[in-house]
Image (cartoon, rainbow, N blue to C red; front, side):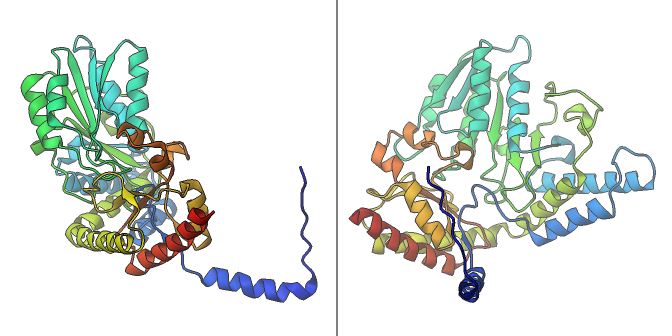
Length: 402
């Protein structure tokens, strides 16, 4: 393997410095918000204050501990408000994955309640890998299949429910194609046909984008994550309906009413609460803003790339999945990155592997291999969309020609 060494001569340094200054001035166009988001300034500020000034342990009984405990409960109320829940129904976790695992394992490991789980083939890996682990423990899992648009039929759930069904776990909004699952109808049918079964909803992509309604949906559990809505990474929450009793994943000091032991990540929790407060106040305006950006993108694609193909109906306007046949997505991503445009080819947790969601939708290899996921946040602008379209036009022309 040859290794090349580049020597920058003194005479070249000034030119190199000017180029670097130009690069620094180039604005980043981040359109991968389904993967993660920047922390809101208000959330970052409160986290910093808790880390440096109000850093007491919430379990301590002195003044600083009591202050920290108060901040914890304030955040709990803020998260509960956006979940349409009571504060006592909110348990903080380290992330959405832990919240999901807590719900699934807790629901299924109740003795004498059944050994049948229902989920869908388009779930996040947090759900799919957890139920696969339970399959190894003797549970039977039914995977509901999507149609070509990424939707799951209510009739398929009705047919799948059995007397020994212990859990239905599904997402509210798909993280790759933006389809919304009929959770209201799912919950109604489940509780009618299998009242002993519990219902878990992964609402990570739906939080702060559409109203969360656990009572209307007959939900027993709802898992959410902070870093998708402007809070730091490393914080999530699980809604557990009042009256539902499950065992925790771990035991320890009894924090979070015994459901999640360990000293609470108070800075992250406070930031999560603040992000929830802001996002809830701006929910309608933010939805309209993202909807307009999605419409702008669709119009641009129709004009410039009439041969492109959408994957899924993106019921949620913040996620658009589109294939550019003849252009490998991994190569197109690199071209876009040269223009400081950042999108993805699917779920960040897949780490570049082919999308199991698009495969479950029975899409062809070329379509899967050329798919891009573009995901918006309220911070995006029309300029971001135009720069994306320009970069796509340059990249697709080059790749299709080659």
